[in-house]
Length: 237
Image (cartoon, rainbow, N blue to C red; front, side, top):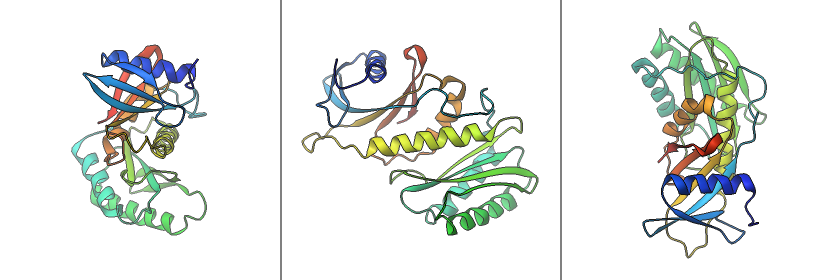
């Protein structure tokens, strides 16, 4: 048995099979493993999200919106707050659809988030109503430099925003922990992150949405999720 646990080994093996690659374990420090694809060696870190991480809430697939108004609203928040959120932190925002007053909603949300940041000495979470839309704001720490400072979701009113908050926080913190582990200085190739999550399928759309907003300049050229049965999904890269 190598230094990798069985779930981690299974995740790397699934990724190797998906890319028709060979793989080997690391030396016990970092990385966890190496893939070789068409002669190119890639360092791989593995993170495991335990089953049931999201706690109580709606276990069904969150119903997300991606229309033009949604993209403009989230984009405005990301642009307006990119310099306000400290390094190592991120803001997660959920908004119920439809957004009827997009500009006013984005402006009000930006003000509320700035207020949250001003009192960030304690964990901050806000549940509020903004121009007819229920919003949740959560400030999280332990996020690596280089990620987007704001991750936003717009969802149908019947979806449970707690699930979106929990899965996003969990993924960001797993990325942060994995990014802190550096391969040997002599290794100059790409780094990938493999996230093993047996319960991730109902939320895969939300995970992909997080991946699309990560703005990865984060040391990982690709982030993959391995689901139950060895199914491999690309989250970023």
